[in-house]
Length: 386
Image 1 (cartoon, rainbow, N blue to C red):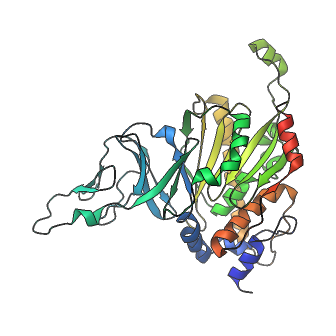
Image 2 (cartoon, rainbow, N blue to C red):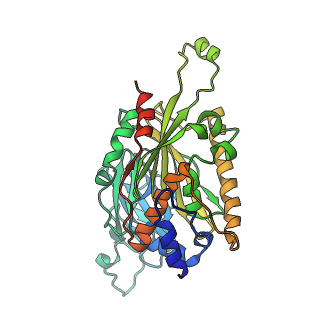
Image 3 (tube, rainbow, N blue to C red):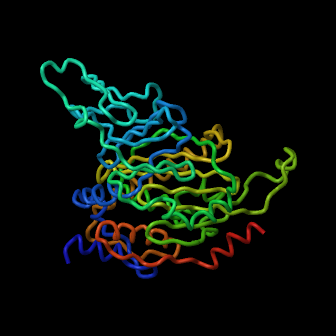
C-alpha cells in the first residue's frame, strides 16, 4: 500500500473503527497540492460575512489556496467574486482584507483598470499595440450567501448551498429564529500548523477540558458535549452552556438566572466551523491553507443587532484563540513522527470522522457513509427548549 492508498483507507473509515490520519498527510507537499486543486478550488469555501461589505465599492480580498480572490459590492447591491490578479502581469489589484472606495479595480503597477464586473475598462500608454479588452477580463467565480455568510466556488460546479445545507435550517432556527442582520470580523492570524489540524481542533469538543480549562471548559464543558447529526458534507454537535455569572449579580441587574442552555456547533468543510449560542450569536472561525505547515485563520460572527466583542468578552475570545493556536502548532510539530502512528478516534471525535470522510470523498471520490442522526443528542437539545 502506497502513501495515498493509506490515506484513502484511513480517511474513509467509519465511526467506531476510524483512526487518526497518517501524520505525513499533514506535512506532505503532494497532499497539500491535491487539497488545493480537488477541495479548495472545486468546493464552496467560506470567505467573510456580507455585513462587513455593505456599501457599493466595499471589498474583501484574500488568497484561496493560492488563488487571489476579491469580492466586491456593486452599485446594484450585488456581491461578485472574481480574480484579484491583474490580467497584465499578475499583480494583486485590491489590498488583502477589507477595504472601501471606488467600484473600479485599478492595478497599482501599470494602472490597468477593471469594472466591478471584472471587465477591462482601460489601460494607459499602450502605444501601437492594440489590447483586446474582451480577452483581458478578470475570471469570475461563483458566489452565494447563506445566512449572511459569503461562500465562493472557484470552478463553479458545486451544488447550491441551499440544497446542501437544507437540513441545517431547523437547528439554526432553534437558537436564532430571526434573520441575521449584522456581523463582525476579527483580524486574521497565521498559525504554524496544517489547516486540517486547525479544522479538527475547531470542530471537536474532546480537548476543551484540557486545552481550554480556564476558558471554554468553564462555560461549555467537554462532558456536556453531544453529537446531533452529520455526514461528510456537514456535521452538527451540541453541548451544555453553563452560565457562570453569579446569580446575585443577575438579580441585581434585573436579569433572571437561567438554567443551563445549549449551544449548537456546525462544521461545514472545508473551511468553516460556527457555533450558535442560546442568545442567537453565530460565532465562527474560518481556516484556509497557506502551505502544508501554514494556516490562515480568522474569527467572526453574525447575529441580530450585534457588535464585535469588547472588554472582558474580547479577552475571553482572544484567550481561547491563543490556546487553540498553541495546541495546533504543538500538534503540528509532532506530525514528523513515523515510529508512532495515530490511534483510535473516540466517540466525542465522531465529527472528526465525518471530516475525514469529506477528505476521502473529495480527494479519492470515495462514497461516504450516509447521514447519521443521534436520537439521544436530539432529545438533549430540544429538551432545553421545553
